[in-house]
Image (tube, rainbow, N blue to C red; front, top):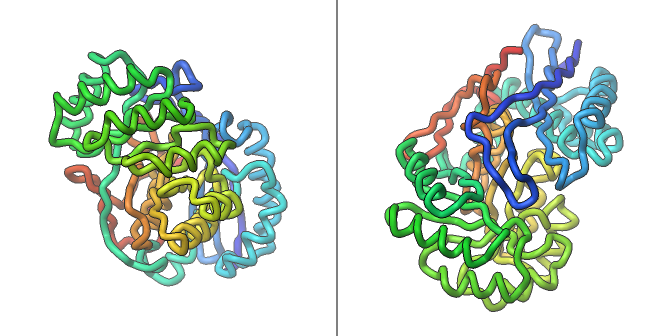
Length: 353
């Protein structure tokens, strides 16, 4: 398979429902860099770089430059030799894992097109659907309940509440949503905002009300995270602590969490996500497939990976729902809280840019 042209297209998309997180007063747009790969027979595949500057330090300028370096190198690669092609691009994407993710997604899309198989089947075909949560940002209790009701009306059955600013307020918010919508499953993402005692206190009072507590303590303090995991009756997931296979191995070795959240954009794509999942599975730790604010194209890649592995216990693939003018037309469907794959080959998406 011969690549004939690679185009790099930076895009900014606004969110229809801005939200607050621990380290950002107002999240209202997503900076993205799309990559289109054309091959000799006239077909095209797409990837996208979505990044969190606070987590990985990436900027749109860095991501665009790295994408263009990879675009030049990719012209001499056979994308069906996926492992080799990604190994060749890896040195060009140092410090910008979102760029490696973009080309990883496009190469896997081409692999699915060449095999005439949807990617989730090509990767393993364990299931065809998974339930996803939707994020509710930090807000006063009454507003949090109203946002939760809105998401329930939209069809979501799992809510992930952002927290970390005030443990007592987080407990009040979770309790209020639980009382208002007892049929919904709730998760709490503390975004590294607690110390060990605060995390354990929150977990203790919310037993039976939250499904999990995500990244309660600072990402670089695995000793603190391990203490929470040892004493919490609520499952504890590492999230920002998981940046790649090496960090996943360290978390598994230290038994620092009950599970790990894997984001394709921050770990470098599907190939590295599968390595992390294999490490977690060997350590008898569950995984969740998460995301950033990203287009349906990248959600399709995360979904394909999530559907391929029996070790993925949780879906958190909501990054596209509030993007205005997402150029992606997805092949997957959303029904009653489920993301459901189709049999369209590759990622099953169409991008118009």
